Image 1 (cartoon, rainbow, N blue to C red):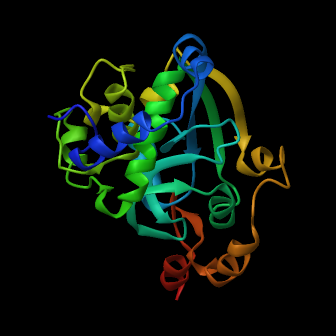
Image 2 (tube, rainbow, N blue to C red):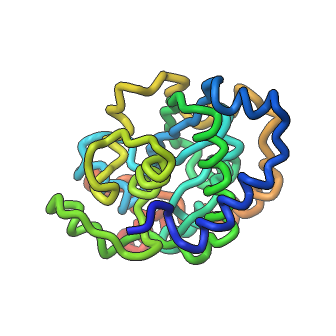
Length: 248
């Protein structure tokens, strides 16, 4: 197994770091001063989310990694478009889009200390993954193995939590003591090394900086996709259009 996420990202990520224009002062800060990365645990409605929630035993069913406290630079393996549940892969998360699709979403945000060098390496690797984002996919085949607690790896296929676990391990941050494919959002939820930042509604999180998120491109899409929003049926959230069909 390669030490980086993928061979395609290794050379470019390394080159990006080498080409970084360090001064003597910045090199000193990179190695001596600590930085922070952020994990965003997400609770959203949906049929698949309901199944994950019942399996792992907590309400948070998704996790993303952020480079800033406001999550303006946050990435994950998840929906490429928040309104379309069946198309998933590596993407940068846009909170305005997520809020437009899931107005009732809840977030828990925590931070983790790392060295400046580790954060720079993680940022470079995330940038490389984003450039090749359509080569990364959700690991559907690995889900039965996860349930049986059997490690499984399919090239460039991850769950949201296994991607971040491997990204961290690749950069010297091994938090879980098990194969990355067995890591779930619950493992991030229970991490003792993290520091609490926020827990509550996504709306409340966004209101901390109301002028910092662009909602304009998502408002019309939200109106056109209202029929895809979810509502509970027998304790499981299903899209409105399926609910409406079942009522006919």
